[in-house]
Image 1: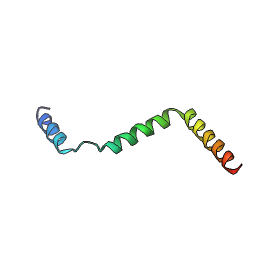
Image 2 (image 1 turned 90 degrees about the vertical axis):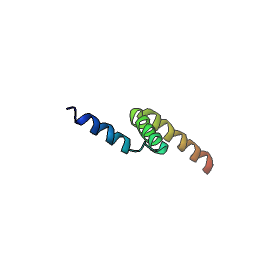
Image 3 (image 1 turned 180 degrees about the horizontal axis):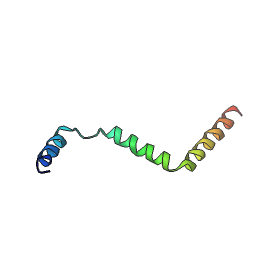
Amino acid sequence: VDSAIPHNSDTAHKVPPLPSYQIVTANFCSKVSSSDSSDEEKKEELEDEDDSFYD
């Protein structure tokens, strides 16, 4: 068990931090998956914009 501690800390230094765009993408995906109702609202807004465009 003791030998695993320095090994874990060693690999932690080798792993680079996540790029900001990956973090943002992960947050966005989690928000979309957590609330499907907001997705429906966005679709309705897009449809309204399309109607006014064709009018």
